[in-house]
Length: 406
Image (tube, rainbow, N blue to C red):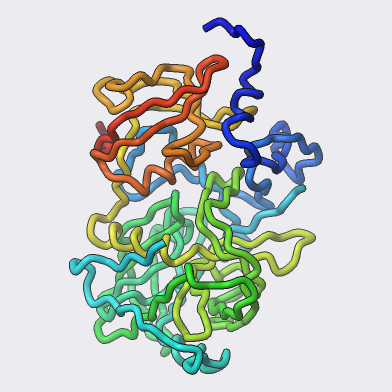
C-alpha cells in the first residue's frame, strides 16, 4: 500500500496506545555476558539475561503449538536444578474440576487466623518434598508440593523436562520413584506422581488477594540436599502480571518477593501467613542484585495443573501459522500460513506482524503462545497486525492444536 502520509511502521505501531510502552531492550548482538548497549524499545517490558544457560526445546508430551517453539534457558548451578537465575540489565481463582482427585479445597481465613513463620512451617512441612533427578549428563535436585493425598506433586517444568529418572523424598526420609505426568514449558509448571497414599496435601490460597508489603514465607532445598526444608521469610515487593523474561522466552504472572531463594528452591512454595501456597518459586535475579525473587502466581498454576493431571499436556488452540519474533518493533512475524488452519480462513497474510491479541500487546512469539493458553478451540479473537505501514484488525476463529507428528 502507498504511504500517503509518510508514516513509518515504527510511528504507526507506537500510536497503538498513548502510554503503553516505555521501557528498554538490550542490544541482542551480544551472545555472552552482560548486555552493555541498551537501546530504546517502546514495547519492551523487562530486560534480563541468563548467567549460565542450557537451552531446551520442549513443551509437554506430544504438544505442538502453531507458532515457533520456544527455547527455554535454564540455570544449572553445580548439581542443582535450581530456580531460573537471571541477570538484569538496565482473576479469578479457578478450582480443578471434579476429575482432579482429592484436591484440598480453598479455605477462607480472617486476620485472627494469621500464623507466625514457625507456625507456617509446622503447618506445611509435611506437604513439601525433595525432588532428585538424573539426566543423561548428570543430575540434581529441587523442591515440590504435594497436591493430593494419593501422590500428585507440583513442581517446575525445568526441573523435570530433561529428567531420565525422578525420585521424591518426603519429610520423614521415605523415598519413592516418581512418574512425570506432564509438564508445560510455557508456564513453567509440571506434575509428577508417586505411588503413595494418605499424604498431606498443601492448602492453596489466592495470590490475587496479596498486597505489596505483605509478609510471605518460602520453603525449599537450597544449595545441597542436606539443607531440605530451609525456611525464609520476606515481603511481597510487587505483583508482576504478564512479566516477560525475553532471554528465557517466558511471559508469566509473577509475585516479586524478598524471601531468600537459591538453587534447589525451584518448584517450592511461596506461602502467605495462613500457611497457604500462593506461588511457586521459579526465578531469581542474580549477580549484583539482592532480594529479587519471583514466584508464579498460584491462580496461573492451578488450571495448568488440572490439564496436566487429566490430559498429560496443555491443549492450546492454534492460529495456524509458523512465525518468529520481530526484533525491532516487537511482535510476531507470520512466516507461513498452515493450510486448513485458522489463519488460512482469515485475512491474515505472510509477513503480517501480529502486535496484539484481543487488545493485549504481544511482543514475542512466546507471549503469543502464552496468550493462546487462555483460549479454547472455537473462540473468536481479534488480532491487531502491522501490514507495511498500516495497522489492521483481523478476526479469526481458533482451532484445536495439532499434535507434533501431524
